[in-house]
Length: 504
Image 1 (cartoon, rainbow, N blue to C red):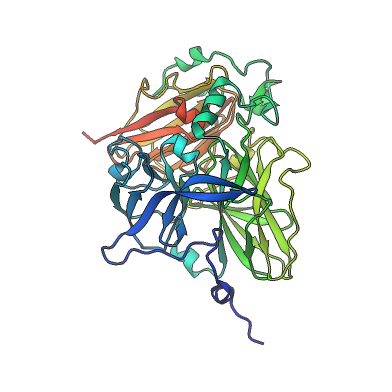
Image 2: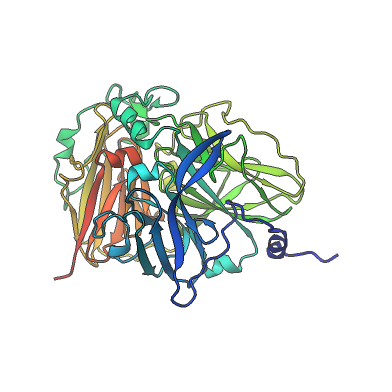
């Protein structure tokens, strides 16, 4: 009997486009750009209709490009509000980055705008850089397959995560800011240290010098294990649903797979304010890429990722029929979502949306981050410039700052094009912050004062009372946004700019 290859099996068995499967590769031909539309759509969430936003490409939500293809796209705004899309993790020319008014304005209803740049290969995503629009699900996968990935005999699956409320984002934000987001109940607050400092005033710390300084004496040993009994705020809002590829566990996406097949699972955390653990259950996995960049493989069955982050897992399925759930567990809570990998005609059992026990808090001791090693690290070179970035804020009042300032009163973080720069994120608040830098790839080089040669990233999670150092080579001379990817934090001011000047 002739054994069909995995690739042949998948091609022969693909009768319909499922969200979890990579969209049919959309490649611009000649000078004709791919069409991408910001538009409204309707989802069925636990039997209730919900009108949300989306990004529709030629073959479904999102875009998938083959290696060597340019990102040649015409974005049209079919919404009734002005918006703008950011290509998260990619490095386009600054004018195409998608941060409002840095330098291009929002895209008016009915307006179209062209984009053309060479994309980085890997797992990326695209989303509105208007927090309330992202909370309305204006986001989608952006996958650029490398030559290595295209030649591999394995099935590719996307798992796109989001949190969702039937309430308007404006109402959600109003509840959070008023303190009605249930921040200290239902998995909202965990004890990890020193007692009663959750709402402390960090103003004195935020007034420390911010650049060219020695960071060795400033809190670098204040990881979670050293903090006594301090209350850590995990979830500042309880969403109505947690979505995996636009669906909940009441009707999860079932992805048909082959017995004994190898899967490359591309997981994207597009949630507004939820950290997830990815649990592969009965099948083990290998973490092979973070934020689109290869890492030395790391085996396991549970990996965490914060908002804006991505991870690629390789999974080898058993050589038998069956169904294998891949679940996303909400940090510090019982809620979960996910998809199911299943062979043809396998029994798929119902999975409860609430686990028996709460998932743990994510990486408070930076244990996961410390185990990640870049496959292709930045070249060694002298550091030209250092900046210390103090991350502060509290639940009451609900205000979040970088270096003691909110957006609009911020002081830019300065560098010159070509300089090796080290940014030290020092979190003096009791919530974790996924810090995202536009237009650059950085390498994690320090955790609580300990030097490492960590992963290449564009979004790094900084736990409460911790410090994470990242190194980068400053790119195009322009204003690049630097912010927390927790959307309510961003919306209330946790944003600054990385201002790169041209070489004199």
